[in-house]
Image (cartoon, rainbow, N blue to C red; front, side, top):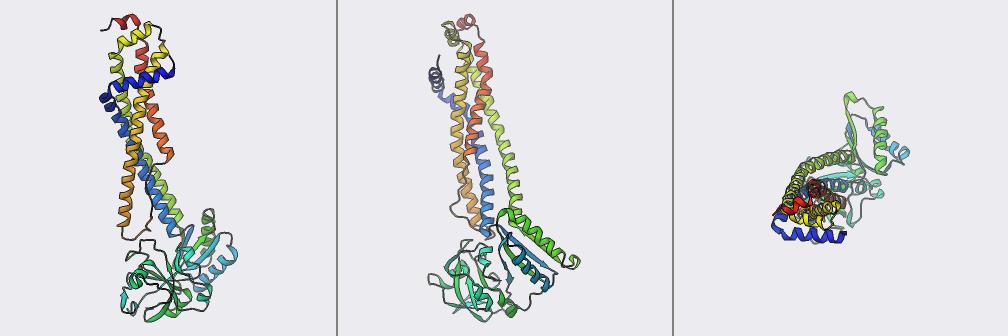
Length: 413
């Protein structure tokens, strides 16, 4: 008997007992769907977090501290410019403006609360280091910083609040009683929501001392590493340079990267995916046991049929092949239905994840056009495992059927 005949007989046997076959598949369907949905959701959440970190700045390094003298910080800036060209692509200071006089931010008759608006001092590379993209106008330039020009780049929330559909370029806003010309707008990373990081304004860093006084020992910088592989060497070189220049007992200095947190988060996500997939995989084993049970029942019901086939020349391997193929058909059909259900469930969970993100209060950037879907490897692995499960649990019933004696089988009514 060839494989074509074996497949036709297997499908015919499955279709002759539709309800029983579907009930037998349920364990495989639920198991495969659970594994795909759980693993895809955990992997999707990890991917979303990675995209959010990248939106905050690719290969970003943050430097902050208090304790080092102004001369030490100046030496660090020179060291980065001269000795770290291979590791650091761009860098920018980040100072912050505080409205001590409570004059607020104003455009004509409109006022924006200072408490929830972040006003930073940066240089011409601030946008690149923080992954802020210009959507209108231009970013700060080296000339703006050198001349301490009274210009600013605003975030999407500020643009919406003050200007609406009108172009903000060339308009003047007042910050702490001083007028600044708007030269550019950063693309919103947080959907332009109020009280998010889109509610920001960036001024040339050379205005910081004039507006806030000497920053002294408290400093913060953003740096963009030349590549992901350059992050760790850059961190070590900066840490070593500064450790030799200030007394750690009277201050604090730290340099870190989001990539370090991202790697830890991905490792935790992978562990959760394995744990969740393992727990859901238990239902697959239950489904396999169900297949074995129903195949044993089938062997008992078809004992006479098996005897007739063996009497007219069917070999032992033909009987084994027939029952193994039937078990594989049941498990593969269950696997395919489970994959479809799992992809559907993963998509729903992904939408819930995005909804939760959108309502999260602006702590992490909003990622658009993101869908949680299982990878090809996960789908292929789930299908192959379900097929293998059917074959493994079908071995005993198939072997039992092939060991029947034709005379004894033919006597069965």
